Image (cartoon, rainbow, N blue to C red; front, side, top):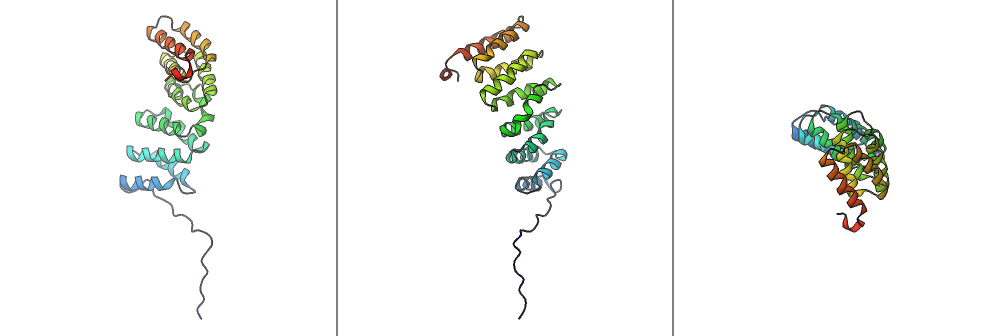
Length: 201
């Protein structure tokens, strides 16, 4: 009687995916499957560093956001400094989609030496609990000298600001006393913060 081999209780090891090969459609399909694999993080990180097709890159960012781990967020963060506007936008969208994984990076990002990174990070602060977002954005306003970065922080505070933010907004206004746009933005923000929460949006 022939011997019958028992089926293995262990799943076979996943074959490596060649995310950088084939047509853009093939790469897109491979990227979408990668996030579900044990080695998905490494695969997506390698693919993102080499991929040029916008649709495939978007799928890579989506895969990293689905993983939503500190490691996947750490891989996305450097792309906030990219000279490619599409890469920067993809990085912001991915980090916004994983606020808890992004959270540990925000204090450093809001103090980054690149004003563009600080500006983009103001938008990411929306995903934090209001109290934490207020504290970080007020700390930024106390030291920030770039007009556009301050304007971005003020815009977020106008939506989620708490009364504790008002002194920082006032001091920011002193630095930009000759700038009509900034004075108007600060006025709107302080008025919205003072309004009942139900009237803010």
